[in-house]
Length: 122
Length: 230
View 1 (tube, rainbow over the protein chains, first blue to last red):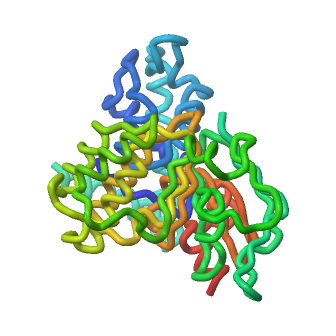
View 2 (cartoon, each protein chain N blue to C red):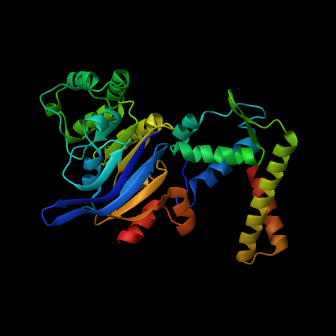
View 3 (cartoon, chains in turn yellow, red):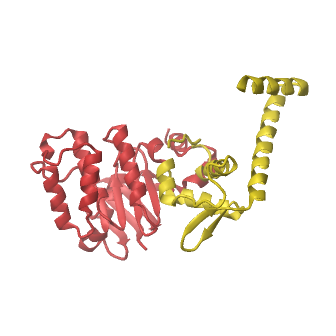
């Protein structure tokens, strides 16, 4: 795996976003064991402590949990992962709307644009 | 648990002051980047830590030992200049290291030799400069040492080999290990290091966690370096 980080921002925050995305889109499934810190560090070519920090944060917000002997797992709490998905979608949409407003696009035009892009996708 | 403690370290070459009253404490469980312009004292500092240079003033302690015979057992040091005999074949040098260091991992060395696409029977003298540097790096990285002191491990090799070396740094890393690595290729290494030390005229200009510095300045470590030393 090769991932391009924005090095002007803390790497651990970007790792948290990647991990959240993995959970939201099901790449990392509920109850599944998370790969070891070392392997993740190798995959993303980053410092192992940075990976550790991101995983601890994932635990703090309830998306992962540690079992003393067997390692770290994705939460089985489906409500949490659903909420995560909604929260991420809402944040991204809010950013998008802000960007549109910044270049003075009206509400109706934004909706039209979204619809057109969606139809292009199909 | 490994520690490096440096108190009021000074190093002179005649009238030239390479290290100027430097104090520093580093604990295991991290990879530390040491950067600075040419002549800022990086190699001088690392040679002292690697017990290649005993002519300094001030206090240097590695796990409580002054750099010397004892510290060499736990410190794997990659110096800035090659020091092994050029008439030996790669495989002979590996055997030599295996006999010399009890923490040497011969299997790892031959694996890295293969990754680097080097021939075991080739003599160092027959190798290109970059190939020779790879041999030095693989010898250093193949010790299961507590402390790694690496002076420019990636600067002399091609990008593919850089990746192999950076991988071996992540693989060789543990909570009990301490790695100090100097480089001028911050772009390649800044995601691998925990913290960075900016050295200028033999003194520490900035020291801090890489992610904290990114947060504080809104810049990559490489951009911060360019800004400070422009």
